[in-house]
Length: 171
Image: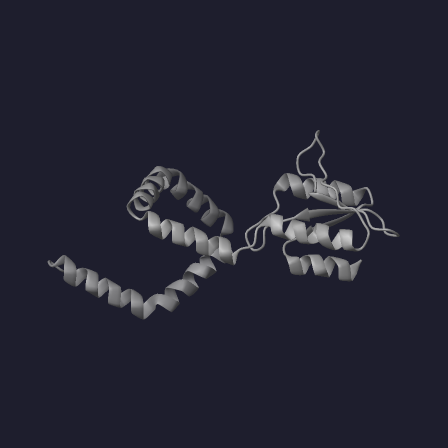
């Protein structure tokens, strides 16, 4: 169907997409499941080409709407606890039980867990803390944890205050 008026064409396309939205989503999900590597590569290529364009748009939006940016950031911070809050909760719980929870670092390697949990009458636990809902383990952290586990050590990854409670319930 050829339209000379661009407004009519846009209206027709919008109506067609609204009517077929679920069908198109199902096809897209099926394709993504069948070809995850192709999809990942395609997204990476698109991001590489459009990265500067997206950054420029974001900078222009932020300059034009500073109050919206501040409001979004405040709402985001309020709804997502930080890793530091979870870490403080862990340290407080360990100290209440008469233990120690020192920071742990391995200067020679990347990926060391954040804390050692030393409780009376228990072995030492290595604990990696991550930001709730947003944190993720990097590849070097996964490798470091695997090498600790291979050496017979206990490694925990904790994502929230509830995870800290689960940790103490299990040990």
